[in-house]
Image 1: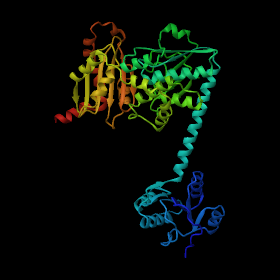
Image 2: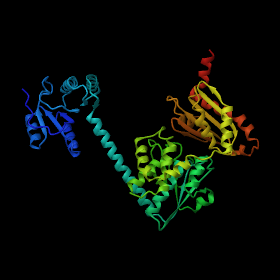
Image 3: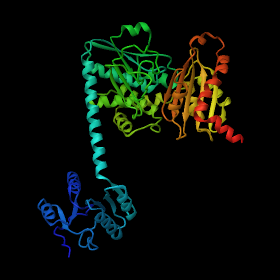
Image 4: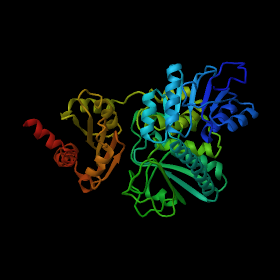
Length: 489
């Protein structure tokens, strides 16, 4: 006969732990930290006696017995944590039979037993070895993040001179915010002997990006060979090396590289402080983690910039977003200037952007779910991604490529929602030997320099002559021509 209750329940019981080995006992300790009441069931009399000595409500039971629940107070959540697969299965069946609404978390030793526990009614099946592994990885990543933050801080603290912080070409909010944050870290690390300057190439053309820079009063300078020579140290943010979406000569010594894009074609350089995390949704997210780890106060201006950078690069937390991005955004949110953020996100649209979007709509051509649109000559290349963002929403379109020509390059902006295609890799493979190309699974870009063809005055005709063989490389890569032939048959 099972033993009867030895403790009177002064309040409703929420938790019941079946099996009090190492895993079960640690669950009891965690619940005790939160002042949660729990009852414990175990077949080992000496273990139960020990638990009672510690003032835990414990019962001796064989959890494989049909009478296992007799005499126990009702509970809401059950942890079934023994090391015996058959005993765990019997306990889950017994609990669910008597208390169908009770939430059951059960321990499994392998996927086969896990499947049986799920079929028996377990709401959650856990594998302790996986929990330990995930915890270990999480803790080591957290420790690594702290160490790398301290390494960056110590590096900046020992420098004397000018640190040039370089964003990628035609910088977006993620790159600009990351440069601001690095300048802020440098100021806290070494305000006496180190000064910072933020540089960019190309244009800040997107109306939101111009509004972003103006409202936050961000001082940015055009990068020239002369100012490059004046810098004692160089940092790249949101680009992974010299030549990766920038015109920095490959042999240039870079001292700091921080990015969330992995580019195997451009060497980071020996001896550089390098933190490249492709698993993170935005470089601004990495910079936010630095600020937290270093316990640097974040003013409203920097916080607003970083939050906007994370939001735009993850497309409002809907693209390439990770738990780290969400956590970092949550840290920044109460520190931002809400009114300023609203103004940045509601800018007026330029006439040229509207014209480019109109051309993209008018000139679209669709082949087997792939949309191609030629917008001709553009001054503001940032209008292309806005057009691509709109066209990818068309019914029947899975991949959209909008392309045009500037004074110096053919530019392509791509969007994708076909899970079978990594558009960044596809553009890199198709156009990587002609210029800069790459990106994420669902958004990417290519910049193909004109070189000596840049002197041609009729850029529209030049684009029409050259674009078809260029696009053919992409079409062959994704099998578009074969798909069209199948449809004709």
